[in-house]
Image (tube, rainbow, N blue to C red; front, side, top):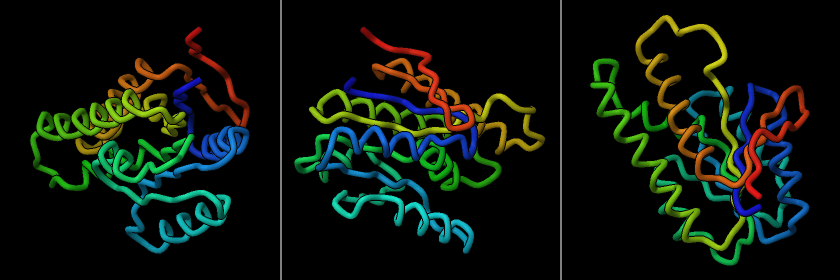
Length: 181
């Protein structure tokens, strides 16, 4: 499969599974990390994630415009892991204040995902994309959280529609929910 979207809940094994898939294809691997260390806890989490990756992999820390940055930095990579769309959408939303027009934020998120899809289409590399499924719980109480949930859902739908395979992780168990022949 050329492109795989791995989704599921927090701590469901998505990142580990993505890395296992990449290890099967062998190097060179480009790992695209979208998280920003906004606080001490996030900095610690990023450090743990870095240690879990093989030293032979190239890491690209890209918080925005990842499609363009992947294109510019892919080199000879045969596999690209993007971890994760959840943080990417968060990074976009963080550029706006609480009073921002939701349609303006949506336009920015959709443009980012469209840019990523074009990158995937024009690349010969295999893409393994990690994201979270956040729409299975309660409706968030505040406006920005609802906007975030809705836009991540739209981003996930766009990617799921484009990729060859979609895996839903539950308690570390991969369930294939889409597989293009």
